[in-house]
Image (cartoon, rainbow over all chains, first blue to last red; front, side, top):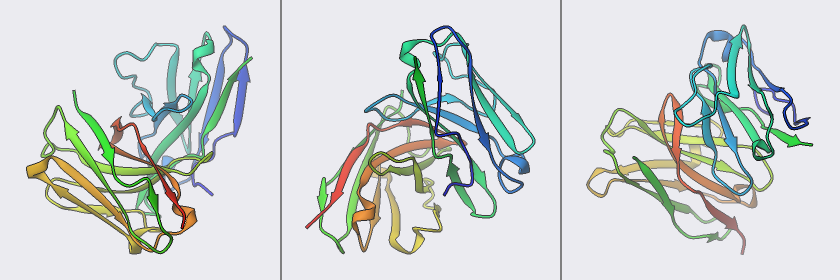
Length: 111
Length: 116
């Protein structure tokens, strides 16, 4: 059981907008620790998608955006494309565990 | 740019020790980054194992701390993972990654299966 809660799955049609939530607590996101997001395409290693809550690495399309408020963070994907079908993970630090934590991941299906 | 490559046995016997190495290329292992290990059991999510700084300072997942040792060899620009008292629950793809607050880049991962 992860301290960061994500929905197991989300789906959307091509062109639509979806959001993936990452809910934490006062010992991680609520303690103002940064949230990072990773995309894992089938059979590949995770890839950094969003860092420090809202920042995109070079090469990541601006269709991907991150936000953070209180004890939660969100990843939004607009203009859904078939190649966005992947697993998405949030990650932060938890002071109660004194360590780095990941959400359990959300599988995005493009209908 | 920095590239990471894991290597090690793909099959380990129960109660044995898992040993993996991550070779770092394209950058300095003595830079201001942490060098980390993350694993992913088949069909499951990501779990942080631990990390090491070039000074030798380490941080470990408390749930694995009693069984984990991470070391660094700056002369070979590589860092290593040892996990003892292995069980089937340790079967996973093991990734190495550089961490500067966030994990990036990642190695391609190596599958380690625990079986007799």
